[in-house]
Image (cartoon, helix red, strand yellow):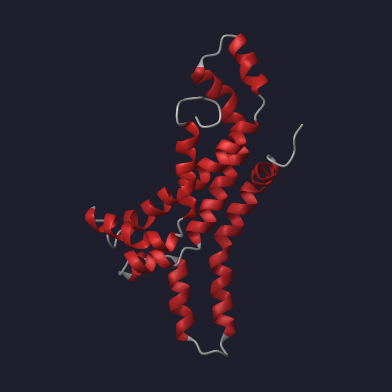
Length: 184
């Protein structure tokens, strides 16, 4: 919407959304906690995941706007001449072309969510709901400075899902990362 359509206040709205990127995530802990508590989601998986999912949207909007603005207008114009409506423009042109950038955004959000450590400590109290990162923190506290073997084994096991996801998405991730760098 920000890249292809023109409407009054488009740039102001986009810059307001971008302004949220300037707020450090640690400043959002208390408001997020209050919202999660108000909805009764403390100590639940939904209370853990929903703020993380909603928090990555601003960066995604920025990346997607940049990507869609870089798509040649001639593609959309040719489809309009052939009789395509707005839905067909997005479903048959924009969405297939945006698959690599969507995978890139998924990868960046997945890694950020997987490595989050502060929010789970704030919102969860039951041990069985805590993610791997907080478990590693507890595991690290159980060993002395000289017991590096068990700690590194835990770190390697915790990184296996990240490596597997990256291996499956690597082709699209690299295409999405380089899509803004090359102009053909």
